[in-house]
Image 1 (cartoon, rainbow, N blue to C red):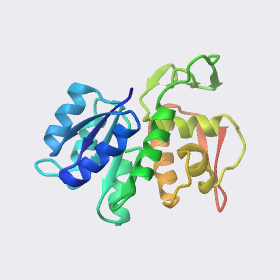
Image 2: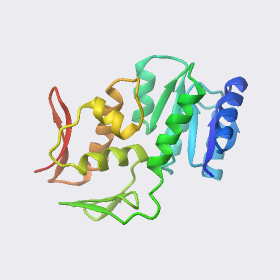
Image 3: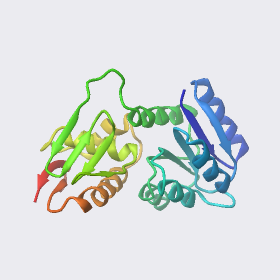
Length: 228
């Protein structure tokens, strides 16, 4: 049973999320301010954090940044504003996905399922690994090494890299990547993919000289290709 930490200061919203998740069999922990949420994330090590951005004591951006300094726990951020800046900043800080308030409990559950499905290695499957110059992607262990050194990726970053690397040379549009990697009909825009590609380049290609792997195909999307 997966444990979900909900960090939300609105008691009504928090209770609604708890009810929806417990109906699906999840164990729910709750915090009503950012500082308490960070303490619980560190102490309880939940399987996923649902994190509101507008929180007392410590805002959601600061909580997300602090969690990412020591953990790769999946994070789904909630924002009351449709401002793209909030969403992009949250993704840049390491969040795996976002929802804009108001949202339906069904959509929240669908997104959490998709994130957790990709964060948990499959059971009973043959171990698979993708090997490239200076880069190894362990599909079963959800581990990436660059030049022999492990690289800490969020679950969504790993999924995106593994998906592209599984079909080298094939160009995928942003919509195709959203559908295939995020696992549902996504209502956001391509900036979600762009921000994850940006972070992958920083984490993976920043250590892989002289090799690069993620190529932008203007007007089409992205593809995986070993480049020097």
